[in-house]
Image (cartoon, rainbow, N blue to C red; front, side, top):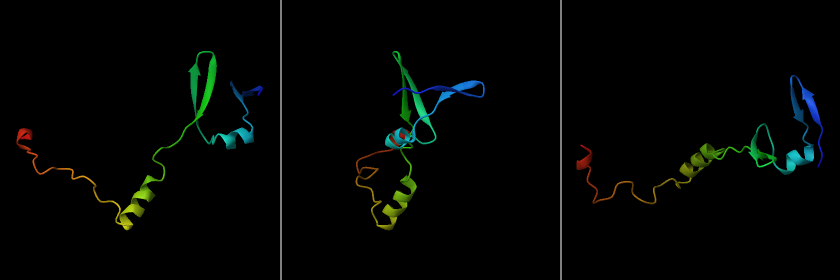
Length: 81
């Protein structure tokens, strides 16, 4: 795909077609990777987006119990004193 470079203030930019934006889930930000002789645009995702709601739902369902105790019976904290 060939795109024109356009003037944006004192800078230059490209217009990304809507179809490409939707297909690759490009929103407000992209990561620009410079690799060899290529410019790579990568979508920026927020990996923990929605976790707060998921944790609330887990708590309401009783699914937020520890699977493994965080302190074992044979542990001694004497060395930490």
